[in-house]
Image (tube, rainbow, N blue to C red):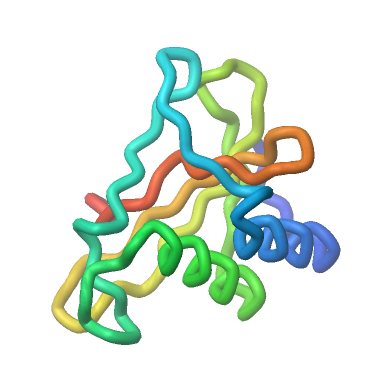
Length: 117
């Protein structure tokens, strides 16, 4: 998929969904695998491991602050679009790899873990 900028409106929508516990979810399935391990990642703001809630709020803040977001074609399910971010990690730690997808009126967490590349 060609790289293009995410619109300000889409950024606002993604951040809003990430903050609202009714509009965000993580679900593993064979058709849409996920690696969502925030408790294994140190929060750069506190140096403590993320919780699921603090991970979502961190994502929202980063999106609002204009972090680079790369559109990617998801392998599972084929043809779906994902939004990929590599965010700064805590001091001495790798970056934080995040991938989300929009699913109806919700945001689905696909990846939240230390970046490996």
